[in-house]
Length: 389
Image (tube, rainbow, N blue to C red; front, side, top):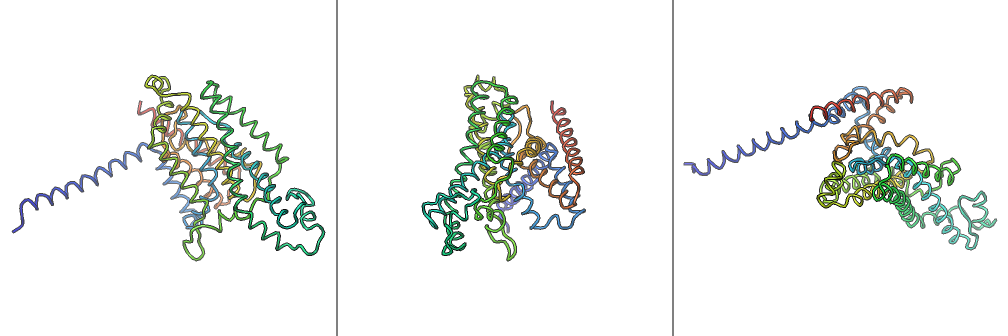
């Protein structure tokens, strides 16, 4: 005969399980209802899967994330600023200038290191028109294999220097923006527009208006050849792993730490935050510093993806960075949003660009479609916020 107590416990456990399932379903439905980007993303994916059978392949998904890796990181930086109640118009050109400065220093460092190994005392630089002649010294005894081996031997140290330079340049712009806006109360729109012009000017002065090739091949291979093998012909590149790590860290900082809560409180109501003891100027400044840091990392990642430092990278990057995270539900008024919503908005934009490329649409048609999606998405968000009030 079955124990009545055991039977009661079994029924209770079954009821608890059913209750948890129902509760989970309610939370999921509520999230979808209050986050239009989820519905839009599902619709866009269904449309592209229908129009192009190759859209949902593993190769294309990896290509999608690799191609947008630097964009994702830059958009995360802008997320911190928008939630804090500010705006950073300089972020796109900070990405560009950090990559250009880094590329120049990496090339000079590696060329000097290679020259020191192959033919000491030449002081040759890869950027010199007669670099090869200086390296070889006109000697037939120096062959290309020696130079190739020397470049491979110095690649690791060169890449670390390049990363450090990108971070320093990004932090420099972030600190300048943070001090002026957070500490001195300068209008963020006007000030970051000014630093955007400075960053853009620096990029063109350093590059002469041209992209800078010649970065270590080992760095570019991190976006397509080096990573975790999935199948014999498919690799999960290191650049995606790096980006996912940055996303997770950003999510933890914003959603799980005291600093993240302070960012949201300052963006929601700076005066109220001040009254409860939060150092509003420092918190506001820290959001711009985080933005600058992530812009620098984004610049470094752009060299992985593009294989060069592209001087024209910043011009078309700003609107997608801001637009995608607003589409994800980050309010320009501040205090609202999280990394998950921001990531969904970024994924939405990346998906659209990838899908339209698959369909071979013209640039003009892509702009029409992208603009229409932004209009529809932002209208849906505005209506949802109005209903909440």
